[in-house]
Length: 154
Image (cartoon, rainbow, N blue to C red):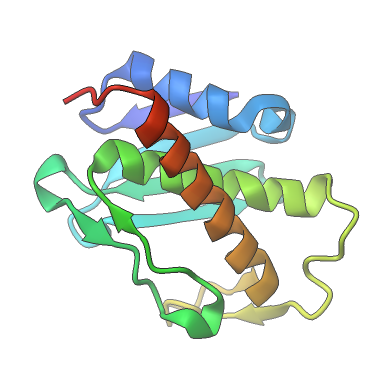
């Protein structure tokens, strides 16, 4: 798995977090790109055909935030994120959980899935309320575990 860190987070920390979160699912991931974007503080995509994850986190001065996204109609949960490290953990956990949904789980997470244009930019994604809800629950558990076990790096 190739990890491309385009943020100011320490390279070693980013690699440790991504490798720890992905675990055995890393065999399904070719590339992970972590980047900053002035218009996007907390967002990610898993391009399953390419095995690529793109995570966009804010700069340290843009936190804390709530993950509000497109509200509950899409299955997302509102959660308080303290900093860019937690944002990385949240997004990586969320997107890697989708790999579990597609490659490992025996449940049919995408039984009633739809192709939707969530950002109205013409790029459609496969969306499932049930899968998004589960991925957010998994990501929130990851942040809670981080808060309990790891001393802040900043």
